[in-house]
Amino acid sequence: MAPPAQAARVFVITGPSGVGKGTLIGLLRERIPELALSVSATTRAPRAGERDGVDYWFLGDDDFADRVESGDFAEWAEYSGRRYGTLKSELARHTAEGRPVVLEIEVQGARQIRESLPGAVQIFISPPSEDALRKRLTGRGTDEPAEVERRLQVATDELAAAGEFEHRVVNDDLAAAVSALERIVTGTLTA
Ligand code: 5GP
Image (cartoon, rainbow, N blue to C red; front, side, top):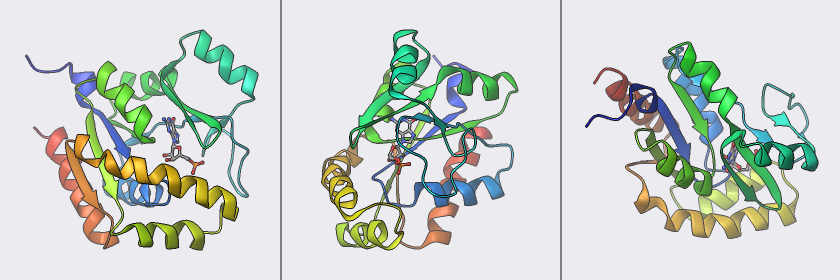
């Protein structure tokens, strides 16, 4: 039996921190403007330039916990000591408009979506090498050295999970990686 249409229009893009998920999604959305982005909730502090409701919904620990308790999340996970989650209301907002929606989430959350929305299309982004990932995480300058180390430790487990994913894209050449994503997304939307 075909999965429900709504589930088929959810795209999960996962992979380790620093692999370029955000950049790829930004470029993908330039090519497929109807593709909506789910704004996640998090308990981590905003980075310079990040805006509430645009980059994330920035929530306090208690607020996030209350929303977990109320069943407001489609998935959520703890990552590097902070919580991140996809609000069901974010998904509903876009799918109600009939728009396909992309989730940029880490691997534990992607696994939860695999269970709850089996029709969602799951894409894993890999770095060309672990060394390239280290260089990107260090070079982007958004995280302190200790945080970069934590993220690299988590990345080792995340990279080991790549084989679980239906689609895999290596972010070596940016333009080639965006084109690969575009083929996956348009292939699904026109199927
Ligand atoms: P960052 O702190 O760099 O913005 O995000 C850290 C990690 O959390 C990244 O791998 C990012 O993709 C992931 N993340 C962002 N939003 C969500 C979410 O809603 N759920 C889950 N499970 N992970 C998320």
